[in-house]
Image (tube, rainbow, N blue to C red):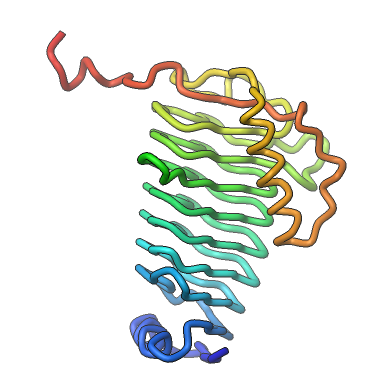
Length: 245
């Protein structure tokens, strides 16, 4: 595994170094990362990057199959327009995580910020997924068109809110699973609570198990029946804005 010390490296220099190194070694460890942007942008399948520190905005932007594991927190817009691959974050993540995400999986051990999963979409077998161990801020799943978001709500205080306001505003596809009770006023008018089916149960168990494996946490206390599923009321809510009646 090739090691790159990122301390004091300009983001372009760091990303150029990664591009050069993966020509001969597709396993890279980055140390002393401190806010450098675009790490992992567009990287293909087979590349694995481990990061110690705090990556800057747009980590894994347009990523196309690589795997990134971060031992620390991540700034905004990680997984922006990501096509495929996997992100594992041993920490928290900022706003707009998974913006316009088109495929792949993101696992966040802790909390996430605002507008997570905004404009997520899916196409045929490409179904993006975001799993959050803690809580999320306002506008979770805003304008979501596909994929899935799972909020595990782990380690929250008794009265701590799982999700912020306007959850699912403008949603017209995809699913949001939340562990615990959330007041109805938290949701946009375009989203509604629906029943879990057998496929949902299998799906949740699989990704809870993966979360447990990645972060070495015993989640045997989680009960699938405590999860609620939310989906779009209308799959084409904006038809009248662009099409004649």
